[in-house]
Amino acid sequence: MMNRCGLITVQKEPVPLKSIEVELEVRDHVATVVSTLNYQNKEDKAVEAVFVFPLPGDAAVCHFSAVVGQKEIVAEVKEKQEAREEYDDALSSGQQAFLLEESEQSPDIFSMKVGSLAPGESASIRLEYVTELAVQADDGLRFCLPAVLNPRYQPQGSEGASVQVFSVPASLVPYTLCFCGRLFSPRPICKVESSCSLDPLQYLNTDQTQATVKLAAGHKFDRDVEVVIYYKDAHQPTAVVEAGQTSAKTGSLMGDPVVMVSLYPEFPPSVMSSVDSCGEFVFLMDRSGSMGAPLNNKERHQTRISSARDTLLLLLKSLPMGCYFNIYSFGSSFQHIFPQSVEYSQKTIEEALKKVEEMEANLGGTEILEPLKHIYSQRCIPNQPRQLFVFTDGEVGNTKEVLDLVKKNSGSHRCFSFGIGEGASSALINGLAKEGGGHAQFITGTDRMQPKGHGGCWSLSQLTREKAGDTLDR
Image 1 (cartoon, rainbow, N blue to C red):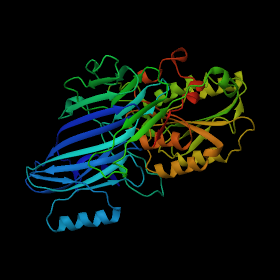
Image 2 (cartoon, rainbow, N blue to C red):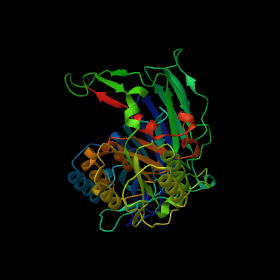
Image 3 (cartoon, one colour):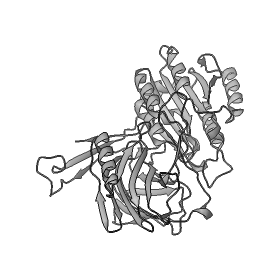
Image 4 (cartoon, rainbow, N blue to C red):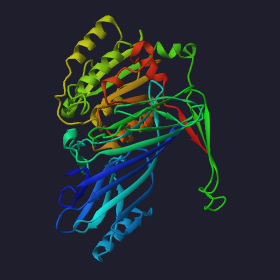
């Protein structure tokens, strides 16, 4: 079964979206996002509507409310089955009701039943969530507001519905996005980069630790809004203190102050030299049909598979002498270049580079579970720590099964993931890195393929050292 994203009726017909407003507040490594979406039922009859939308996989929804006509409804957290029963009871008695649920298969898909909308009636939906920003290989903190959620491939035998979204040209998007952000940090804010046009960064104080950023006027929400924030002295530990709520009970979670300590260590080359000279590097490339799609709506000439292929070629050329490596690719089935990992040599690397250059998005569906099982079944090479690099557009519906498998095998390897193209599942990409003790990187444009440092391109040593900093809460 396929569901579309956005506000739709139970008959899968879209309810027109009038406007979107997004407010972003970043405090050091943590972002609070408030989204307000306004809809109107233009039908001549009442409709029961469902809203399906993407969120970061590790986001925590802390507020949800909806205004329909003169009524405002504020959500309460309840056990899932109890919430469903109360929603059905409210509808059957003619009352207005809203139901927000997380997908059981992928935690970055939320669906919200907004109940019955009368003819001509408007609905204003306000959603607030908190998420930690991932550190990129070039030390930037990445925030992404998805414009699309890619169709999720559902492997045979898996349960659950997949979600289908179609991205459209900017000329056909009937609304604009209003987006503004406020940045606060214990250290100076160096710069902010984006995949979209921004107004100049406005500093709010002389030490440049507070700033505002906003999208240029008239932005059509036809592609992801990606914002990358750079701090001065990124590797220095920081602490942010938040006072407790005065209205909350003293001694309670919300009533007491909390401190967030961010640690993003940088190891000197002398410490890492022994690590750089050895290892088993296993690369897993997504060659499903969806990888043939454009990287984004702006750079439609660049496909996801070509972007992933170029990135893999860069990494292969930075392999250390004396290491072992192998390359797998998958779709409905999977292939490997060598039967098992081989030692790096001029002959083996030339053979690998030639075969990678020939890779196309021609292997069908996105069956990532089986090649992962095969890789984990291979015996590790003594004194060669295994590191797995996954390249995918994240279009799978069995995310939980995949992450459970990586977690089960986390003691034998580290997993690094690359999300290719707009709409890649943050739950899968970030989850692979989190469960595998590695690092996640999103490639949504050609400018993100070659971050600054290390001669202008990525290297394996850079990625394996620059693991995202840990955030500690007390």
